[in-house]
Length: 356
Image 1 (cartoon, rainbow, N blue to C red):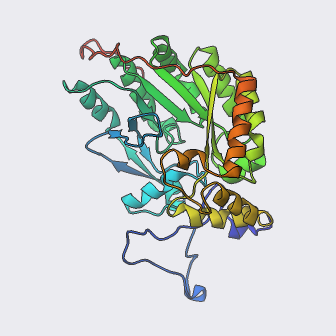
Image 2 (cartoon, rainbow, N blue to C red):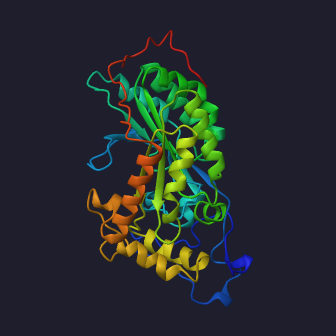
Image 3 (cartoon, one colour):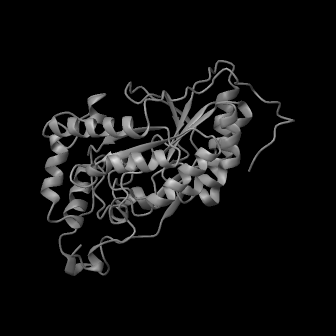
């Protein structure tokens, strides 16, 4: 990367902070010589308290495989450049760029709201997917422990939950996860999209190494917690060649299942990613961009259900076949476990124990 240090924000994925499309007015930099300080700086992360009225979100997308999700945090300090959740930050009045990584909204009443939802007489239990938008184990969780309290609530109510994360902080909660697994109430997906450290540092700057995530998978498997590999996202020209090696390494440490998604650059993410790829892969940027377009009918994004995740065309089909062969070779054709909903019960408040 032939960039001067002052031109690149180390430890951040996005390298710009585009205007929020919902704003009628915005600041622009026209005469840099007239500024007393840099117009754009890589500020430290700010935590913003929120108190929503509900915590469970209904999911209507038929290609995701789950119907309600829970996200204790909005925005994510991991800084993954490709993250589709960046666009949701604009609904909060922030940018999908650097703001997404450095302005983290915390739902401090998440546990209270989850208990309230479960206590409704009309509530019918079905698996809840945690981290459908942003990672529930991102760095601030180490201090706030909201995800841990939520997992303890799922255990108290004997309610099924699925988790996807790329943070090894999950190891802290092996006790609760193991207790849920004993009852058939939990499954975990660990995201890894490259075994090459130089790719991770550029694409996912504040995440654990691939080796650490593989160790996490191994520890989960040792506790008989169902664990799968999520290769997400596949970016043609950057990591598409790594699928067989990723599947093999995951299988070696105990993962029984795997899945993948092809990158799609929807909304503001397209320009954020373009800026990033030209700064990090100047010689291969055009090839990478065209590779993404080849998977989405000549565009950087495809919103068609089903097709948006796997892509379409010869490039996408080649990726699909490579993945299929790797899974068959290293993992077999095991069915993903169905989580139990028949154990659900509302606990006695006086006798209820909390695992904090």
